[in-house]
Length: 532
Image (tube, rainbow, N blue to C red; front, side, top):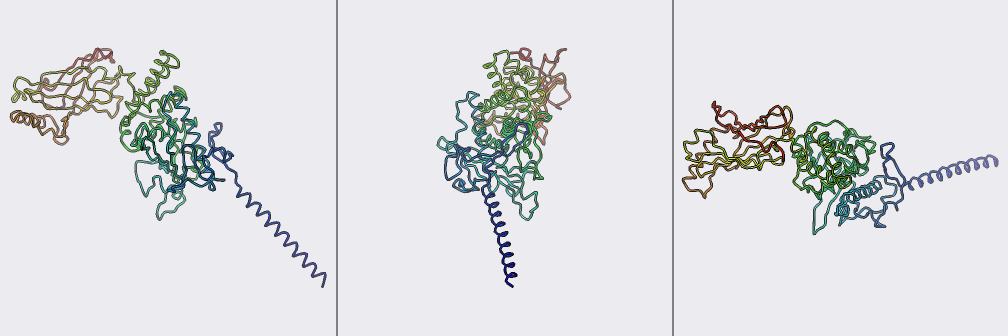
């Protein structure tokens, strides 16, 4: 009996020992998990993707021992007023990547501004930029719906605003979209952009452009295109928002690849006004520009153009004009005038013009260079108007004011001492139509009243002249315009000799205004054959 009891006791001891060893090893495993490595996503240029890299907390150059605060950023969780506590950073790939990449993009922009000769310390933000991770939304289907936007965001730059001479901005990164009822895998988590370095680069660039392009520029084609361009340029890689530039994307079903090395078409002016109408055209054109002039020169000159761009300027023609001017000046400073002239012309001929945009360096190739540079007065060819006009019955065209930035021809119908203002708005949906090409024979315009209240004569006129004005208004309305649109088609023809790029005569004809071949036709001599 004693041996049996002893054997039973040994068996219990063995079981207890094995259990203790299991608990001990398990606790070691759990302890090792709590002591996670601190890693960030960093770019591997050879593999062209972000990979995990071990870092120490000290490498983040934190400015606080208790909270997540960097030189020019304070990182918050959601809408918390105080920055994230340090206890949340250890082993958190997303939080560590965010701070690490914010400092990398900040340093890169600082280099660009120094190389550009800028005196603005645009990478220094006082007070610090508030960066919110796990934000309640950046924009989500429950808060914002736009059927035209196919690629959905979960990141947002709160437009910078100035207060007492300081710029205040916020960056929001939302981890998911919350859609009531639906809880499928695809909808529960789209992209957590706080862990996507390319998205971080994009949003940070909005901080830079927002100062120059204005608050309303964020979300528009020019600012969005610039942000995508610099995100790709910093990676030296033309493909963004994929699983290689953002790990989270590989688990998503609603995100498409964004490439800047694909073929692009012709500029469409509608991208200037529609909210996020065309994501691809501008950054793809910038990428082609970068390939032609080189990385450093492209990054510097595009920023110089941003610096000199007003809040209301468009990509075409203002920004393109400014960019070509920046390229010329920068190359002239580095390599001399001839090199600068040759490169600008190469960019114009090989890149800008084939895609429907151009700068002042190509002004001799556009029809506006041939327009008269003075006001031109011609007799009114409408015989019937002489019934209530006396001696003076003429049209005064202000050709000198027509230009690429504002392709509108203003003119007056002078009847005795009374004037009625009219305009011809030249159609500009495709600016390549302004180029002198072998197939260019005319451009179209719309004749309209210059004022929305054209039916109201100037009260300073005498009663007699007010009556005459109303007669003129009624006559134009009934005989010139289509009744529904209150417009009239006008065509400007360009007569040339055997040299199709040299205009000899400009003819203006109003559409459908009677059978007389003499009526409503006007000719103008071009300006010095189009040369300056």
